[in-house]
Amino acid sequence: MPETIFSKILRGEIPCHKVYEDDHVLAFLDINPISRGHTLVIPKESAATLDQLSDEASAAIGRVLPRLARAVLAVTGAPAYNVLQNNGASAHQAVFHVHFHIIPKHADGSGLGIGWPSGKLDDGSALAAQIAGKL
Ligand code: 5GP
Image (spheres, rainbow, N blue to C red):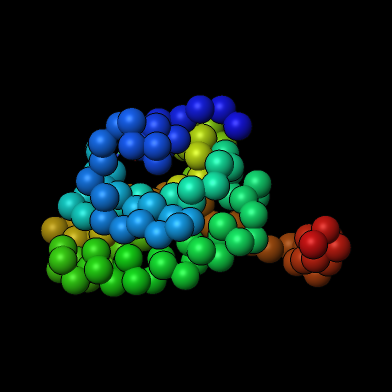
């Protein structure tokens, strides 16, 4: 596992504005927020991308994500939010330690802008069977 800025934050070598911590998870404010309340949720387990994360660490994240989202919404007053999780440089991942972004979408429009180039599903049966076969 390569050393990342988040490893340093986890070890307390770099400060952060912590909002939550338990045995498996740390959540803190993003240093360059897309909108007010932009929060990062990371596992303490070292994994670069989500597919490399253990079931236990992912479960620990999943357990607290809704609670964190509720707290961010309650404090910021945002009516909506995105949970973003980037994997791989071409998918906009800059820090190679798994992290989930909670990004409030505020009434003034600030928040995540998304391009959604949707297409048409032509081979759904075959594709679903192929993916299911890999599980
Ligand atoms: P990614 O593009 O990898 O999904 O997002 C990485 C995020 O980490 C960015 O939103 C960036 O602002 C945030 N970030 C990078 N370095 C630091 C840091 O030292 N402290 C905090 N709090 N956030 C950071």
